[in-house]
Length: 69
Image (tube, rainbow, N blue to C red; front, side, top):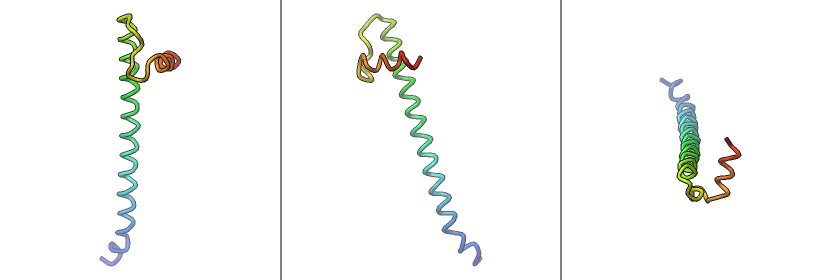
């Protein structure tokens, strides 16, 4: 029992680190999803012959999407 009590802080650190890693992964995933949404939006706007999508700031973002393809 004494040994378990001594390692308790270690488990706290592991749990905190795990939480941080998960949060970071979720943030990355959200960023990736937003990028996909942006590209999809820009493509649909281009297909319709409309102006570049305003979702990510208009022409500049259209250029950025075009460069990434």
